Figure 1 (cartoon, protein in one colour):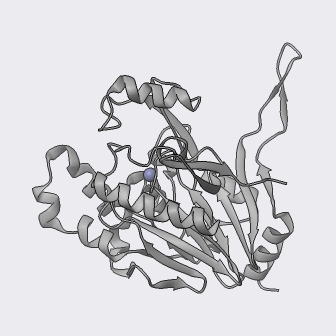
Figure 2 (tube, rainbow, N blue to C red):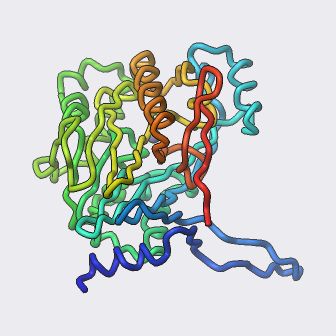
Figure 3 (cartoon, rainbow, N blue to C red):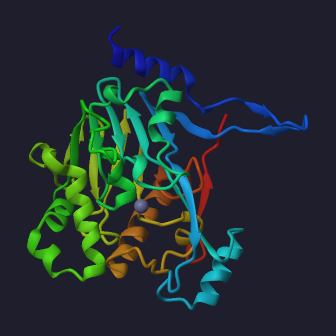
Length: 321
Ligand SMILES: [Zn+2]
């Protein structure tokens, strides 16, 4: 067996389960045992494919004023409290996804590497926990060009972190962020995003593969139009035999809030009305066809099903065994 086949086999043998990195517990000086088990990856089967939701980390910051543009801050706090989230904080997780098709080893989004804070940048360590080395990955697929999705392409010093991988990106996203006229016309506060994109692709920009919506990227992985969050934001249908799922990235911020209330306008959505239309179209389809979804910003492992409920959708985490 070559290494890729071995990886497929080993991922399959651990499907489905959650792998943890680090020691199971740590003895404190006083003798009390404090659990110390960072969650790493949740592995599951999809037809003949193996899929892993892999934790890059999480972050909490003060809830920015006006975070939900069509609610007052008091209403936003109430919406957070209603699902058990701290009302004064924005709590975010970051969950890239790995798919082993047996032929390709595909990583969707890359987290922060060492460009974020101490609570993020765990992707490579957590890939190691499921037996994956960065150089095993042959394709990195990016959903869109926000820093929490692309910064992990290289470390702060500039070294590529997935050195053997072809990087595949939505053509529409590339056209927007790599256009110098668009960057120059952007407000000063927005220029950092454009510069971050240029840093992430760097000298390799010429090798980046651009795909259109509807196009198959590798066998079993097809790009799906999902714009609104950004101009080229893309979801992906992953299909093996009769089974399919979708990696939906940032069609919601936390699905506990934004699937439940799809009309909420998150400040991160560049075209909020378009984001709402996209969110409803994809969630409607997933609810009707009972398609498993993996979100980027849901509570880890951020994968499960949605069901229609009132004006929105309940997010039901997938059964873990
Ligand atoms: Zn994001």
